[in-house]
Image (tube, rainbow, N blue to C red; front, side):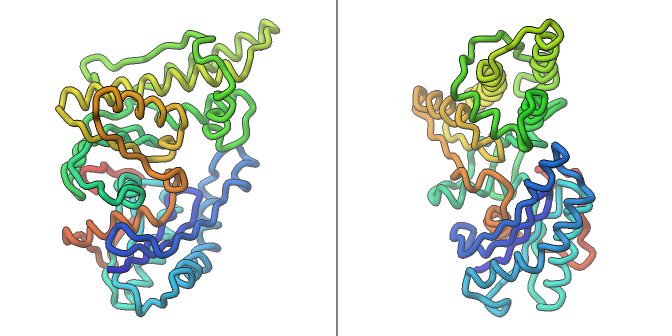
Length: 336
């Protein structure tokens, strides 16, 4: 089954053709990063306008790269939640029009479920059940994936997401957007023990995260040093902050796996490309004899191939939509 998938939840307009949830025939991404970098972050109105401009050529290129026309497509899939509402609406409305004009079934896909599904492309043998750490700019979840379309949240952030904390700390240090990538690069040359930063916990919720206090701690460190005229080693600050964030993520993730008796772990989302997170979890799982699955780095960020992968399983479970499909800025992965 070949699915034409569309993704427009934030600042990438993407389209892909994916067969049977695992084989990618094409994947096209039109990024807006350079434009949003001027403002230090994504400007929703600009993102929506750029999606409207890019969606037709991106979908056309995806079909051409797959050497297909719409006659060779079996279903249309689209990200409908969560994300920037204006950006989502561009993709949803385009997909609805395409499905209506072709008579093809329309498959609505939850953005975080798509990130998890990126692992089905990178790891052909992976099947549920497994425990997944979903970490991105807007989300930090520990999810028990019981089946392809049945998921249960085990832990979540109570405030900032890990990716948001990385980006804001990086911005304070004058790094360009998206800051988390640059922070990770600079941290490789620093001492992770140079600065002692807090490890916030949530009372009575051992699997939940809280990154707001940690983010504030590193921002205060930088501001206080600047006010006193003390020059700090940026690489050491990056390394210490990255170490603290990854320590929080891995501690809760490993504890959840131990308590639930799960030995098959998966990571997904933009922050799953973080080099220290990948190394740390590889080491921790290796010591315990657990299996760890990670998406290829090219699939960690937003893309449509992952949407097509999840859409296949949503379609098999009977999850299709009509022309009344709407977009939603927020929605639980359990309901997606």
